[in-house]
Length: 329
Image 1 (cartoon, rainbow, N blue to C red):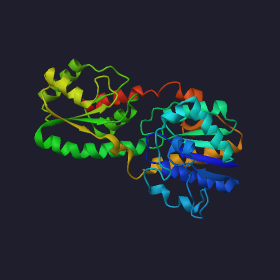
Image 2: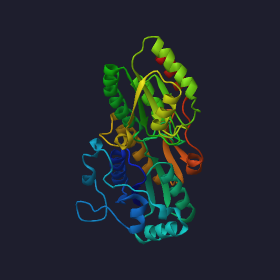
Image 3: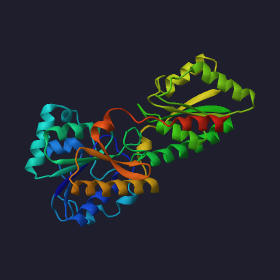
């Protein structure tokens, strides 16, 4: 079998270990792997990874040392053209011309939505792999890159807490998460934040100010608040202005972590998850599976139809908000 692999959308720590797992698992099974550079854009432009032997195929040697490398050696991109009928039709033509029998796209909701659409008109096999720091996909308890992104955000918060304590200040730390607050919530719990704001829960500025006043009166001199970029207030900067207007008792500053959360050496958890998902994806192709995503469900790697994965965003765990409330009191 000739297997194509690509990364699409935002990069995530662990994509490289996942590529490594796919290539090596495929080799053991007797398959050939074609690396498609720059995601769906590269598929439309027939931009392939050239291996050490000069051929447009990936060998075990090409993926040596990838476990500890962030980013993706296949590069990534967003491709509006692929979202059109013409784009999908061209992708089918290119897959057919290059004799690719199966496709393993690594990415988030947009990537897997594109895979679903491609599967409707292409007779090859498709197994998606969840690679996004947002952890916003159904069909998996954790996505590749999520754990490393938490660690990156927590390390930043640990440093900010020193400055907050030195200046009796409050920092609003904005993390990624347009539709899902998992990253902000996990960061808040791990980083010891006192307050968190996520897209799934309507923000009450008066309630937050009441809580800040409670902390100030109880003698707490510094604060850290984690804010998901998709919070209904419009992000950390707008949140700061609203808190000021409502009478926040703390001097405040905003720190937007932004794309720094996507970079860095993948942590052990992400490396292990990437290896398990990559190997299972190749195995699923051998079983004749298609139109599904591999994901972590109750500790086991399971297959979920793409239609179920992309129908809505993964929901935050209510118990995590309760834990944060208890620990921050």
